[in-house]
Image (cartoon, rainbow, N blue to C red):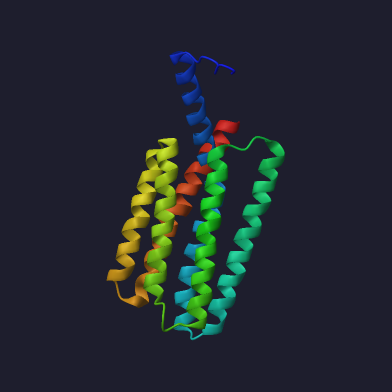
Length: 200
């Protein structure tokens, strides 16, 4: 039976520090997607209220379809460019991708059910579930990276999940739009700027 190689305490500490550093770099690489998704959701929310005031209700659905497809294509294009520059993918990056794919899948399912049976799922309840999922994803990421800013983002989305149930249903999308701007777009800009600065 082969003996496991001995790793000294110093080597273990160095390995942990290296893993944390790689995880932090992965968090910074998520700056661009956060900036795009947060910005597009904020813009979509503001324009939806404007369209509703003008009674352009059909245009609201087309607007969100256009924004989501555009954001998805921008993020995919950015990710492909990043993958060409670096071949290595960290475990956190893989876990993060799986979490956001899961959240996106739940959002799509809620959207389909809400469209087919609007009387069964209220908009505030659907936004509450989505906000909780986003907050949970950020909490897990913060635990893996020790990045305090991710804890703040997680707390913001969890508070958002409660507030959307307390305000009138008309204003629940506005709450999510504000959280997307503060917790995604602004934080994404910070991470993206920091990543660009470190890569120079």
